[in-house]
Image (cartoon, rainbow, N blue to C red):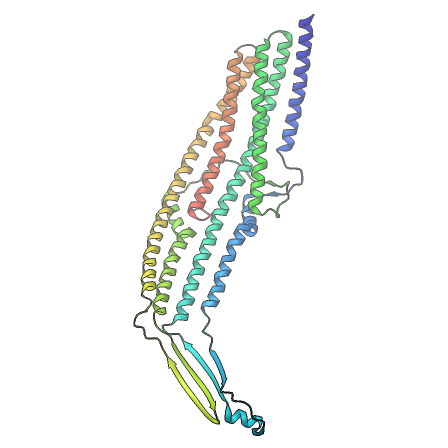
Length: 433
């Protein structure tokens, strides 16, 4: 009697558990999909939105305008100097009259002077400012390159999560059917309670896979929204595009040549050499003393006089030698940096190329028959287990192998697509040769 009561309690618990599992599957499916009518964006749309609206990039772009303003400052000429002095004011005598007092008893000096820059300082300042703007502009373009890779990586993460939700949901549904069959066998006495509990515990792993994939999707969508512009897409948006293997046939020499032409960080280094030469020319120009000319009008005790003056520092000690020497070494520094960046560009391309080839081979391993083999093995094992032809441990091992193979294949696709984006970043353009 006690055994029968315990058996009924176990059945009630089993049915309640299955109802909870079914609810989890339905909730998981809804949670892993965007609502109907939600905004969907493609990868290229996400990149263009990020280039237009990403706040960090917009902040970086203001540095170009700041440098353009410095060009205006660099091209300004010196202001002339105006001076006036009214001196020697004796006590006023009313009997002389005010105008007579001003004319005969006071002194007035009015002067105007102007500094003439020698050595074409203004031209050198302007060129140095323009070269600095060119460097800054290339740095901003390099920021765009990095942002494109970040957006693409997050976009692929969303696709990977959604693909994983799909396969884990199918796995969960299929294994739930196995649990139902096992329950029937358990009730009829053909399956021990211990084996039945093992199958139920195995179900937990499939549920965990679904939940982890759902969390990965939500987090990836949130991170992607931050990059494309938080205000530009609604909270329930989704991505659109094929998550699949697409082989790329391209040679390493073509990629290296394209990278040397397109990489903005290499252009930063090259323009840094030009900027260093401009600073060197400006330092030499600053070593030449400027000429100051002036004119002065004086009215003293009824006498009018004019004065013309000219002054120039004697470049005996200070000829800007230190700054000239420093900027000369800056040229060497910029040249060495350019060589270093060029080597880094070629290294990045090779590393990304080899990474893409490696991930391509991994995907091919799965597509060369292993996916079909895993699927077929699972179907045979499930059929055999339901008819008592194989043991429970063999069946569960086949289920784990199938689950691991399906998840690993989608991760391989995601790794391949990420490696392809890394190659685009290494080359410096999304249009690969």
